[in-house]
Length: 108
Image 1 (cartoon, rainbow, N blue to C red):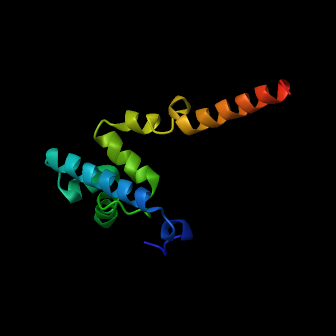
Image 2 (spheres, rainbow, N blue to C red):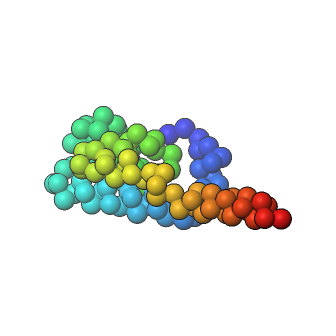
């Protein structure tokens, strides 16, 4: 794999941990299906080293590889829901604060 980007070098710890958990889950899903690394990599159209890196949660692996693994497991619907606007609680809180601030300025 090419040299890691600065964004990978400065990856927040919790993000790295989440990728590790995702990789573990994807590996377990492959094993539960009794698929070898080689067979699963072939189905994903990636190399065995790339699949191994993905299963370790390597942030240098492209999102498309993770997405393909989810698709093979029938879980690509979960990918679509990850950043759904209606689940973005932080943005909703910011919008509410802005509305409250705007309302408070009208009453001054």
